[in-house]
Length: 481
Length: 97
Image 1 (spheres, chains in turn red, brown):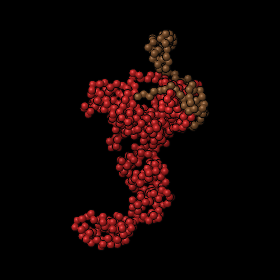
Image 2: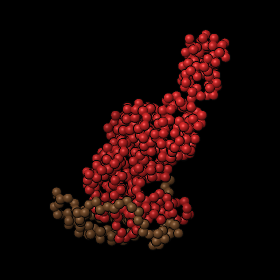
Image 3: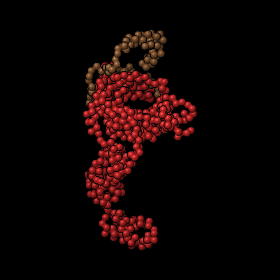
Image 4: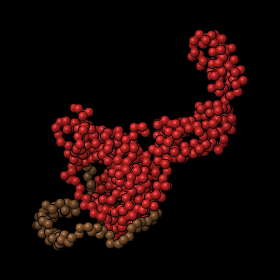
C-alpha cells in the first residue's frame, strides 16, 4: 500500500460547555453534578406554555471566543429549532443557531512560532446541551437526569484544514488552552465539558475533490482524538487500496482497541427540520458591546508566547509552558515587574515552583510567596549569596510555610548564605592545594578532571558555603599559575 | 403537492407514531388537502420581501446570569408518566455498538 500518495482532510467540531452560572434559556443553575434532576426548571423540563429567556453571558462568552480566534462577530443573530426525538431532550428540539452563527471566518495558529500554520474557523455558534441518559443503573428502563439539559454550549467548527492526527492534536490543544485561559469553559474532556467530533476523509495527493467523509465520535481525550484520526486514515486508505468505496457514516472510537466502528449510516441520517425559533427575539450585537468585551480580554497565550521569546529571550518551549495557564501568566507577569532576570524567573516557575505545585496537586494561585519576594531570591542567587540548589531544595520548602519572611533573612536563619569573600576562599583554596601536592602535579600534567577533587576539598573546609563560582575561578588561577 | 404513503411513513417515523395501512391512506388524503390549502399562499409574489419571523421589533431580550431556582426535584418528577425518586424512567434505549 502506498500511503505516501494519499493525504487526509480533517475538520473538527468542538463543543464547549460555557462557564455560566445558569442555563442558556432559563435561570436554573448550570453547575456540573448535583443530585439528579435538582438543577432544573419548567423551561428545562419542556413544560407546555413555558418560554425561554436568553442568558446574556452566553453571548459574551461566545463573542470572547470569537475575538480570541480572529472571527467576525455577527450583528444580527437569530435562534433556530433543531428538531429530533430523544428522551434526554424534553422539548423535542434543541435551540441553536443555524443560518446565523454569532462568529464566522476566524483562525487559530498551530505549530511553533517560526513555522505556524493557520487553521480556519468556519463558525462558532451558541446552543444548548441535552440531559444525560443512564443505561446501566436499571435493568428495564433508561434513566434520565436533566441537570445538564439547557446548559449553554458553543460549537466551534474548523475548516477542513487539518492534514494529520498530530495537527488535530495541536489544534485541539490550542482550543482547550484558549477556552481555559479565557474562563469560557473548564476544558475537561473526561467529564465531557469539552467534546470533539472529527470529520475525516482521504484523497490522492493533488486531487481537488474531497473524498467521502466519515464522522468519528466518542473520543474523550485529546490523545484519543489523535489516535482515532490516525486509525481512521489508515482504515480509509486500506479500504480504497482494496477497491472498496468509503461510505458516508458516523463511527465511534473504541479507546481500548484503538479502532473505530460504525454507529449509523447516512441513509438513516436525521432530518432536523430546522426553522427559526419564534420564542426568542433576535439578538443585535452592537459594535460597542464587542469592543467592551475586547477591551476586557487579557493578552492571549500566543501573543504572550511570542513576546516572551522575542523580548525576554526565552526558549519556545519555556514560553509555551509559561503561557499554558492563566494563573501562571498572572504570576510570571507580576514577577518580571520586579526582576530582569527573565531566564532565571522562568526556570524558577517551571522548575522548583512547579515541582512544589505538582507534589501537592496545587494550582499556581496556591503558591504563597509574593512575586516581589521571589524576585529578591533570584537576586540573592545571582549575587552568589545563595546557591540555586540550596534555594530550591532547602529554602523553598521552609519558605512556603512562612512566605512573609524575606529570603535573605530566611537563608541566614537556615545557614545557607554562601561565602563570597575572596580572601577567605583563597585561604581555603591554598589549604586544599597544600594538602594534595601530588594531585596538583598530576593536574599540571594534564589530568584536568582533578579540579573536582579540589572543589570538594574547598567545599568541605567551608562547610559547603563557599561560592562555587569564586572558588572555581581561584582554583583555576592557582593551578594554571 | 402530492402526499403519498411513503411520505406519511417518513413523517410518522420522525414523529415516532405508528399507523395502520388504511389510516395512512386516509392521512395522506387529508394532509394533501391541507397542504393544497396552504399552497394557495405560493401564488402571492414575495420577491424582495424579508420573511417575517417575529411579530414585534424587540431585540436583546435577555437576562443577567443570576441563579433563580423555582422547582424541587419532587416537583420536577411529579408529572412524569414514569419516574423513581431520582430519575425520569423511559423505555430502554439500547446503546449502539
